[in-house]
Image 1 (cartoon, rainbow, N blue to C red):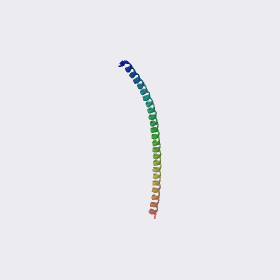
Image 2: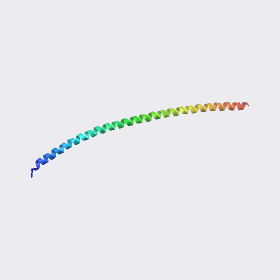
Image 3: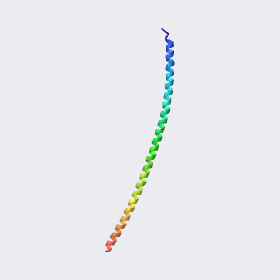
Length: 90
């Protein structure tokens, strides 16, 4: 039976090599994860900007429509007053 020391030394060497490779793999995965996370952050920022732009356009359009509606009401009111004044004279 061989002495246990060479077996232990070989096992330790294999374990150290596997640990080193595991460290490399973990480091690569962390770098890739950070890149992916940055891409998702950029995507979220672009999505939020598009949503804000859309909301601003909608608000502007609603304000324009509200102004047109108020203008139409003023014109209608003026026409009604003109009609009523003509009826009152008649």
